[in-house]
Figure (cartoon, rainbow, N blue to C red):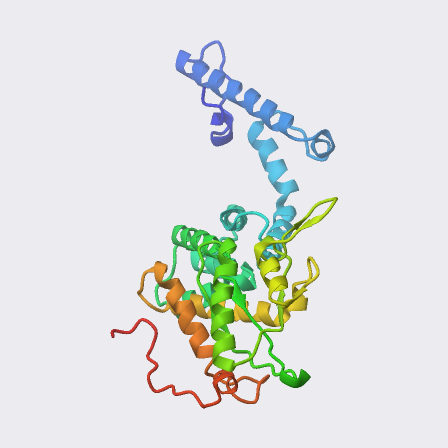
Length: 337
């Protein structure tokens, strides 16, 4: 059955006894379509709204009354959708794919009311809605000449989100203070481990190297309360981890941050964020395979140890070793050897 026939064709002349069979069949087709269309439209509208629409026995006339009634509403809907699209931000709770699909749905609804936006503008709105964690990803997009299509944008964003979920590497940040005078040298070491349970193994290597090179002993270690550092607590007792037991055996004071307060270890957290941003930038601007991200991290640490900052008067390398670093051997990351 052609249900919308009465919405597309005008009302035919009512047949008489002298009308041809074709005319009678055409009128019956229109009358059946008109009846079904009216029944569907009126049944789909709530009684409160249906009472505000002029009633009619003609489906086409009734449709025009509905359109006239909601003509002004479409303008307010367009304004609402535009404001929502511009101000919408990805909160990280749902997947980035779902976030992009929601914004694409808004663009489709705008197109239905003759307020279509180009794919380029939609991509721009989506990139603007991403949080600061996608900063290097945005920089990579802005530096490219090619414009991404929606399918490419979704694939790239999903891939970037998976990268962000990768666990950040653990790094040791120690403060050494002879004669109770604290020297914030900010010299960093990094060790790549396949799992956090290996933290004690690399700390033993770090401890031996630092104490041998500086002829000083490590007095305290500051860390969060994760299981590999702190252990676990039960209702009856506390079970120290092998890392905590090692510190106790060697007379090293363990300073732990309070749960849910990463700001107490702010220097290390900020350094972690800086390193991750540097690694992403280095990898995005090179053609090297992704499995070399660990080497990029080592290079990032190497560079930060040899450049000055506002916090320390000299480079961390100079404060740690006692002589100025040489930088004439550095090359662009990923360049031919």
